[in-house]
Length: 118
Length: 175
Image (cartoon, rainbow over all chains, first blue to last red; front, side):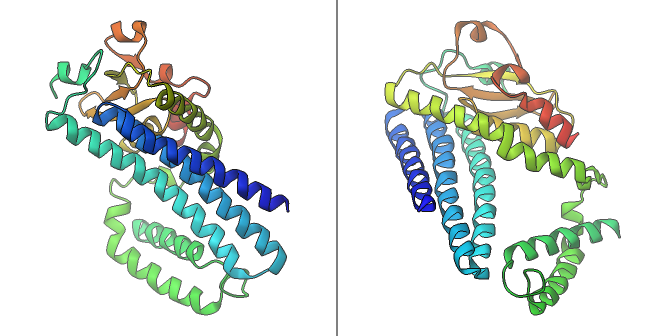
């Protein structure tokens, strides 16, 4: 019962933040601000979806003592870590490639990278 | 020899994590344990030069690994939550003032710089764009720059995190 409420809350938070990430991609003006929305909001939302899976698996493991639910917990934790690391690395690569190919931030109040000329 | 053992050990631990809950010896069946040992030895032989490239084994220090495990759900997650509320606010209101600024990272090793860049990307309204490889300075895209920050030529790494001192944690973990 408590597990079901927790799962509901976690799924709701996860879906809200993933939806905000998508709205951000559509609303923001240039590639860098869009990356902000797509990286942070989706990582956070997906972490909460993962937590919902973990709560479900732990609750079922306590009820049945079946080893496969323990496996589900560990796999979800590994998936969350892999997602956080690859999401950050991927957005870093996209931002760097965009700046090198001449896609300057627009609008921007200051651009130290262009001034440094690297 | 030492790189081989470290790589094989890490590979074996990951194999054990992936097959947890398969049998009765603690959580594993003996078939999985045997398969894990064979695969780990093979992986250690093939990829020992990739994982331990610079002959510096400071990252197998258990204190550093423990701190890393505390760092991710602790201070890092606090900043991640704050960053997400901030981004949610900016998505809804559309109030942004973006720009790219220079950040003095002060990190000496590559691993620490990677950890800082990833932490910056996932935390407070900032995104790493490029790195100056001579000085280890990061160029970060900030979604909302205030007037003071705009005038400065470079920021210290401590100034962009508000609640937790993440650069100090990263220095303790990775340097």
